[in-house]
Amino acid sequence: MTTFSGASSHSPSWTERVVVRDGVRLSCRDWGGSGPDVLLHGLAGHAGEWDATARALRDAGHRVLALDQRGHGHSERRPENATRAFWDEWAAITCPTLAVLGQGTEGGIVGDEEYAEMARLLPGLYGASVPGAGHDVHLERPELLHDLVTGFLGPCLEVHSNS
Image 1: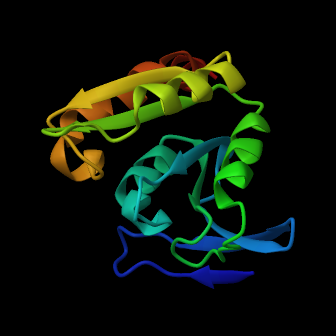
Image 2: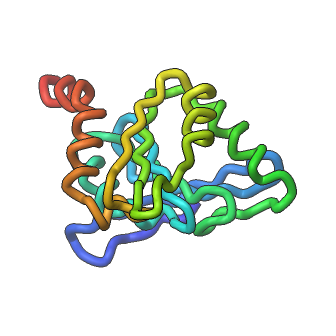
């Protein structure tokens, strides 16, 4: 486990946590707090893309984990059957899940068949498509992402603010 400090006093530290699953090393940034809320990057992304969002959620009292998915950031990739491993891991999720899907000018980043499989494996899935955003929804449509995350976490935020 490695602890990293942010670049300024407004960027508190996070801890890198590593788990090995099926022989593959997976890395995630643990921002602390209570929860967890898990942030997953898009295609060709990494956990660091969520630093500002993670910091804000943590400061609001949430435990935030930002995962480097297989083959991204500091996580390893096992090339054989990587797609099957993704679906196995997706099916193992046991908490309420918000999937924010970019929808660029060339259509959705996640196709209809993939989204149907996501919803089948995770019946409580809340999916939101973001028109005009590709892989980097948090950069291209930050106000809409904020509204989606706040709406999804709304009941949790209300309980936390009343406690």
